[in-house]
Amino acid sequence: MKNDLITKSLVATSVAALVAPLAVAPAHASPDWNKVPAKTVNAFYPGVASMEWMLNTGDHSGARGIRKGETCASCHETETAEFARKIVEGKKAEPSLDNAKGRAAAIPVKVQAAVDDGTLYLRFQWKAGSGARKHDEKNPAKLAVMLDAGKVEYGAIGGCWATCHDDLRSMPDVNTAAKDHPRAKEYDFRADGPTKYIKESRSDISTARPRGGWDKLKSAADNEALLKDGKFLEMWQWRSGEPPRSGTVSTARLLKADKDLAEGRLDNGVYTVTFKRKLGGGPGKVDLQMGKTYNIGFAVHDDHSNWRYHQVSLGYTLGVGTKGDLSAMKD
Ligand code: HEC
Picture 1: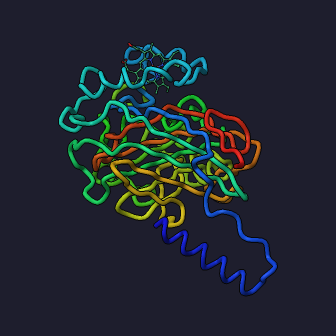
Picture 2 (picture 1 turned 90 degrees about the vertical axis):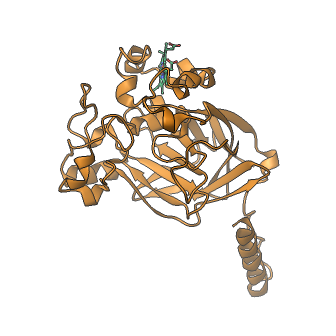
Picture 3 (picture 1 turned 45 degrees about the vertical axis):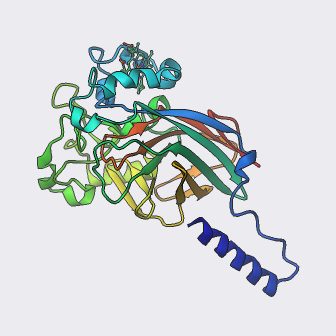
């Protein structure tokens, strides 16, 4: 894929050179990653620790802190690898040891961000996994990113956690009858249940079992208004065995093929995945602007895993042309 990109840009360069010999050479196809600062972020195994779990004082000692507006990272940044070990071993928040067995408690992921010529680049690198139970035969690895422009409840506190509920696919309170819901097709409710959604897309979220609010849908017009008002997370997904996808998480996770969004490779046991996305916005896109900060979270599906059996980051800020937890600066 990388070669493809290089070939394309070489072709573009030589065509441009033929047609307009005096034109300025086009900008680099990608930043010089050796010069871009890197931050190592632990993606950790979360078990069934959903947003409802986070907000329940009986499950989570941090619940009151979250209600006061404290971020996950403010309490946990340095200790995720430690506490996730308890989860992956089934001592906390993990009812399915078969699926957890062999997975990493935490994966240190090297993250780099840059912006150049009106394009945002994000690069992720991590060591490939160790052979836990396979769910996804087609994709040995996947990497997902979610972005919020500060408009989604809990987006600033916990990144992806804003979308994680007890009644999603593979979560404890999933309702597999969701596939028979009259709006199942529209929102991709399948035999194994619904996908991620934000609180704003539901009229109620139950904190008693069954937790969540998959079926407390608002009207189609209300859901459309959410997208117009920027109340969604933009999601990107790179897959090692299938084309990349992008889309939104608001009423559901709705993704479409987006072949130029990402490229990735496995070299000597290390995955390198690079996303690129033009600044600006549009329907279902966060309006990315120089000088602004966004909320970001990411997840690694390693070892052919699917559903909740991933390693996730806490929520961070991404500065585009400005400082954030991750800073995408001009190189
Ligand atoms: C005000 C501080 C605070 C905030 C904010 C907070 N937590 Fe916690 N969290 C705690 C404490 C304290 C524990 C219990 C740790 C222990 O028992 O060792 C805990 C436990 C956990 C655990 C279980 C691991 C274990 O060993 O108990 C997970 C997972 C977790 N937090 C994730 C999060 C996420 C994700 C968020 C944000 C949505 C968050 N926390 C926000 C303080 C906080």
